[in-house]
Amino acid sequence: MSESNCPLVERIARVLAGAKLSANADGDNGHAADEVDRTWREHVNQALAVLHTMREPDEAQAAVGDTQTWRNMVEAAIAQRID
Image (cartoon, rainbow, N blue to C red; front, top):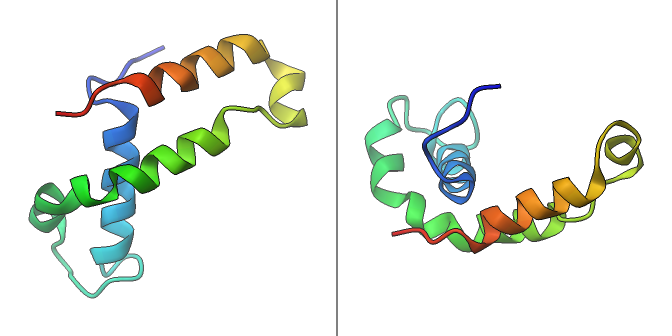
């Protein structure tokens, strides 16, 4: 399995920034990458809210994996510091 070198909180914040800005989502910017790079930190609190919601796996997730490992992984993402 491959691993990202970018913290999960940052990846989620970037997706949220892109969704707000990009013409491919709710925004009107056809080339939003530079603006996402500048503004993703504004979405860290929203990203953390998403992760807090994800701490508890649903029934489908629990049926296919170790729920404690899931919780530990999400908690680790929440605890990771974003500089």
